[in-house]
Image 1 (cartoon, one colour):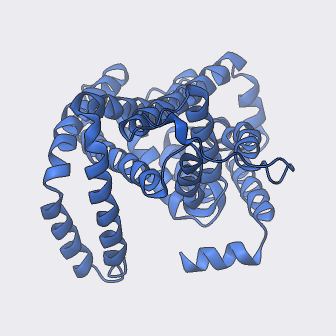
Image 2 (cartoon, helix red, strand yellow; image 1 turned 120 degrees about the horizontal axis):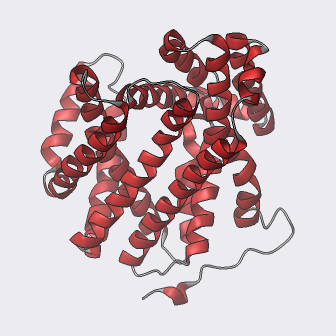
Length: 345
C-alpha cells in the first residue's frame, strides 16, 4: 500500500486515470483486433441501456442501505442525498488505486450530512461487513453449483445462488455480531502462519475495533431493518454481477451463470490488488484468461469493452459531475454548507 501511495504522489491523478483508460481499451483490441468493432455494431443499443439500468438500480439499492443505517443512528437522509453520496463514492473508488477513495468519500460525505465521524465510519465498516457476508456465502454456493451443476441450466443457477445467499447470509448476519471473537482469533492464527501476511494482523485488529463499535451503534436499528439492509446488499451485488452474464446472453454465450459469477469475483479481486484505478490491466487479463477459451477473439474483445463501459467507464462519466457537485464546491468557488444537525431524529 505504501508503494501505491508513493506512486500516486509521484504522478498526478489525471495521468493515472488516463493510463488506466489506455490500458483498459488497448488490451481488448489485442484480443480481437478490429473485428471487435464489428461485434459491437451487432449489439443493440437497448442492451447497453438495460445494462446501465442494472448499474443504476444497484446504486439505488446502496442508497437505500445508507438511508436505513443513517436512520438507525438518528439522521434522516433524503433519497437524492443518499444517491449522490453513493455515486460519488463509487466514482472515487474506481478513480483511485485499490478503490481506496470509496470509503474515505463515504465517511466525508456522511459526516457532512449530520453524522459524527465515528458514526460515519461505523456505517462504512458495517456496510463492508454486509459485503463480506455476501461474498462469504455467494462464492461457496456458486462454486458448489459449478462443480456439481452439470444438470443445472443457465436459467436456474442464478436463482439458486440468490436463494442460497439469502438463506446462509441471514444466518451468518444474525450470528456474526455476537460471536465474532472466535472468527477473529481463527483469522489471526491463519494470518500468523502464512508468510508475508503478518502485517495484516494489525489491520485486522483495527478493523475489529471499528466493527465492534459499529455493531454497538447499528444493532439499534432492529432485526427487521437489519435484514432489509442485507436484502438490499444482495440486490446490489446480484445486479452488478448480473451485468456480464446478461451481456453474454445477448451475445449468444450459453455458459453457466455460476462460472461467470466466480470469474467476476476473481476479476474484481485482481483489480482491487492493482495500483491502477479501476483495476485496469489486471481485470482485462483475467477476463481473457477465463472466457477466451469459450469465445472467439472478436466476441471476447467486444464483451470486455461493453462490460468495462458499464462497470468502469460509466462510473467515471456519470460519477465525475456528481462527485464535483457534491464534494468540490470549494473548487467551484462556492462555500461548503455545514452539517445539518437539525435532521437528527
